[in-house]
Structures are given as C-alpha cells and as structure tokens.
Length: 127
Ligand SMILES: [Zn+2]
Ligand SMILES: [Zn+2]
Image (cartoon, rainbow, N blue to C red; front, side, top):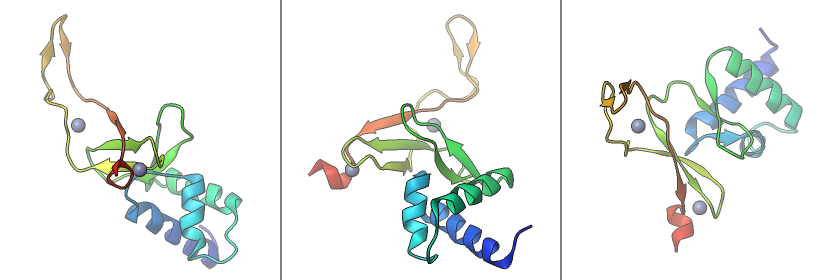
C-alpha cells in the first residue's frame, strides 16, 4: 500500500512501460514518465519498478551487456530486436524460430522453449 501520490506515480510509470515499443531501461522510464509526473526523481522510478516487479505486473528483460530493461508481464511469447544505431529495443510481432515445442534434437534433447534477441537496424536507422 502506498499514498495516493505513490499510487498515481506507479500507475503512470506502468502506463509508460505498457505503451512502449519494447522493454525500457530505468533511464527511459524516467524520461518518458517525467513528462507526466512533475519533478519525478530517478529514485522514485527505481522504487516504483521494484514494487511493480514484486507485484508481478512487470518483469526484467536481460539483454547481454545492457542494464536491465522492463516490460509488462502479460506480453506473451515474443522476441526482441535491438537496434545497434539508436540502441532502442523493440518487441517483434513474429516468432522467427521454426523449432516447435516438443521437437527432439539429436542427442535426445527435447525442446520446451527458446529465447532469442535479434540485432540490426530499426526502420528509422536503416535509411
Ligand atoms: Zn534505430
Ligand atoms: Zn519464439
């Protein structure tokens, strides 16, 4: 439980994470939510993110070599595309992995899941 002000801050922060084009870093959340919440401090963003994670509303996304990014927990199976130019991470609408769950690989390995991050240039940066 928090004060009314805390609740409003958290719901504004959750809204920014939800409407984003992909997972956001703490700095990105701070920048985007700052337009809506006057005098928003970075410590407040950290606290809100911690509370939202503990509440199961958002999850951390680990990208190799990057600080953690955050996305809502209800996004379902999806992959990320990391633009090497603008360093923005996007959700992909397609799953490019053609290895269904249950596939038996040589050696007796049964596939249950996969994770994948693609790297390249986004539409804005390819030009
Ligand atoms: Zn880009
Ligand atoms: Zn997939």
